Image 1 (tube, chains in turn cyan, green):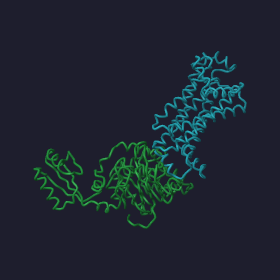
Image 2: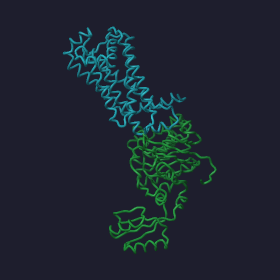
Image 3: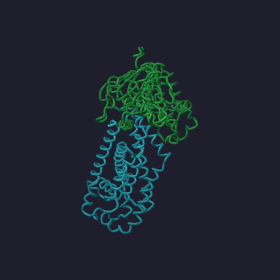
Image 4: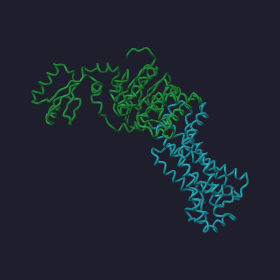
Length: 260
Length: 329
């Protein structure tokens, strides 16, 4: 830990912020795509899903049911921005420049992560706002909202560190796509848009055991005022585990000898 | 070697480095006195970028030691980083930021403070003729402008040792001249410059001392004049009237290089009347007609040939250069 960790990370964060402000396209698409999906799902499946949703979440409309999933999509799209930005830094050679300077070593990564988490949380907030306009009616206490913020922030942090690691590991921007696809598709194979009971056995097993399901169930439980049981702990454990994995992997990728 | 008394800004002993099976540096020894320009000259894949990467703490050496500005690269990398500036082969600028913002970013990382940082950025913009482009994103810059911005960013922290890895590769002749002038100006400020180049003329133009790198070790070192003195003279160029005669002559003579399109052969030789007479009598005896002859005074091409046994534009093998590209990232 260098004496300049904070100052340098703040400088790098300002750099990331400037990128976002100057080129808002990525931010707009990471808000826009989840909203389109929200409209699509609510409009197309809303009626058909009514009874299925009533069975697992009594008193909730379909839009109430899918909001946590849409929040996750927003996080997923944020990840693609992050992975690509880090990859550009790596391939453009500016990370090599930073590495030959006497600055806090991984401050460039910290800058990316802080910027990405703020950007993503903003995108999530916008999707929740749009959902409210479309009829989303949560029954959450202030404490529950705090819980939602906490788990969303934790998941964002975890996926962002993973995105940073992927961005550093990929030799080309195309190298990040499989990870991005994974992050964007996994929510579909979970309890995000349809209750898992309706899925075929193998898929249901997967949907139950993949990391996004407990997170979605936790957010949904908090928003709709349902009891959580042990799901909350499972969600926190997954997010913490992924965050640690992403952090360790990213640092290893950053410090690795680039030529080997 | 030249008996200079100032302490070395860069010294290296026995540097070795391999990529997998491939040995890129094979016991490299270097010494660069303070306030001088040293050019590491060599073909693609000779290990130039690897050397810069090790000395600038980007990668480690497998064996050997090196100190830069008095700091050991392996034991005190941060000490080295505090003293150096590096301009890599591929301009490392932030394309999304403007030229001025790129410089302010560097100033912030060097803890200049807001006001002083801006002043430093503006000074450098003026010095590198980037004032007009200052508020445009660096991604819109031409190759020459990017290089100038890159070098300006390297100078923000006033480094005492500057590494320039092929600083003019890919530049047009005019931008290359401008870059040369800039590099000369830097040394007058007392900094030490370590540059790599494939361009013999560049080394000749800029460097006080030149090291010829081949297959990961220095095969010759000295001033341009000392290197040229190592060979007896320059070279002789013979032009033939037909390809058949070119072939016959090149079978008979030990040529440095041949050009099938121009029908020319280059031979080592000092151009003395005696040696020319001997050469022509051999050609006459073989019945080979020479169309024209020209005598060239020695240049670094001849030096390269003399110390490596091959012309400089012929790389030993291109497979190394990929590794070197990778190493930059």
